[in-house]
Length: 333
Image 1: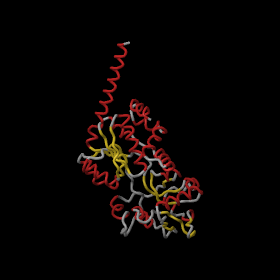
Image 2: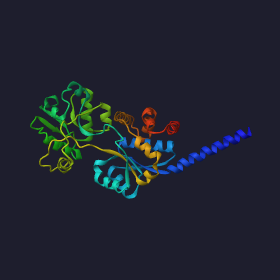
Image 3: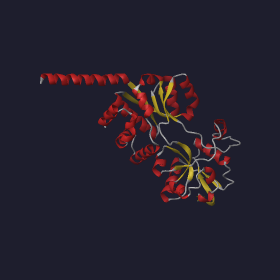
Image 4: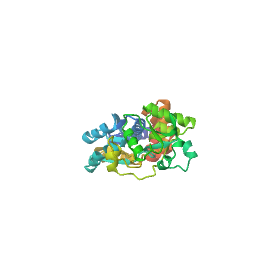
């Protein structure tokens, strides 16, 4: 019995030392806690998995695209930016990666994301032949504007949003006014969401701008419409389409939205297994949409949403990590 107890004690010490070694190997990690729901969820999931699966000590640091990138680039903090939309920082990010300060751990950590023009699933099902923006804009009669039913309603961004300029210029580029369309300003974010929700719930047609991943797109299963024309090129898009003084906008598809998980060199150097985890970590768009609906309906923050995700989508996240790490994470739920 004495030998058995001594053996168990030794095993316990070994396990403790192993856990301590894992924690020491990972050490302290800081993660950007974004100020939008999908980024908040991803940060909380990363925190839970890195702490419980890899023995890290994790700090969440409030972040936003521009300020987080600047801090990572200049100070090396935070270590991980899980959902960095790079269009806003493409040139300085490329420079930072070329110089080795920052590394992309994963391009596309969420599928089916981006901006563009959307319709309801019911409308798409009823009109399968109108499968591009170019085709839809020939049929303004299918989206009657309530204030002037002789025109079709295209719902743009509220005044003051950057995307309003882009939509206004594309509206001109496709000559939509001459084709019988009205450019409708919803007035606010609530107005934009309300117009979509009302149409989707009543089975009415809706055609307008939105972006994903968002709770609205997930809740109503809104359908992104391909433009049916090639992208005009970065020079014209950045130099004209997105500006208020674009004299001659040309027809174009929406510029590609790119999201990366970006890490600092220090983290990449010591990351090892954690870098492999980040490289494997991809949220299917449908799953992220469902989680954003959950967060909205339940007023859930990142921490609660992370527990819900880990409990409900085990088949998704267990594919990101080795079996022993998955077992530790499940044991901590």
